[in-house]
Length: 181
Image (cartoon, rainbow, N blue to C red; front, top):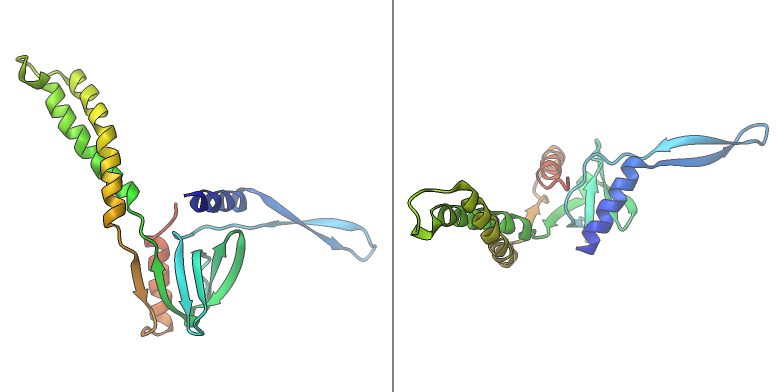
């Protein structure tokens, strides 16, 4: 969780902070040139294996170009050639989805049970239903999140059999599908 927060902070800073580099002009006066680093698309953390059997664990991919893609790990960027990438494995992320499904199920059950007054009154009260719905959504959220983590699976993609265009199209799809935004 801390790795994700640190990665998000790095991405935020690189999107919103202007970096300056110093260059010396002909008159030996230091002037500042403004350079903006912009990361527009990053993925969840993944593992990349290249054709030379190099393994890059827990990296974020971004910056797909004609012949290369950039990876980011702990604030250090590196560029890989698309043809060198053999496999990608995206780490399982199941807590959020499970928690959302659990909270929705808990809210619906609580809303129906609370709105009917547990069978003791004759009318349906929306206010009571909302209150009981929100209260029951909380434990169902944690139960669903726990089940989501238990049943989440890593997603593995083998790119070794694809040609250059196929790899590039697949990487473009994966960056959009597993976007970290």
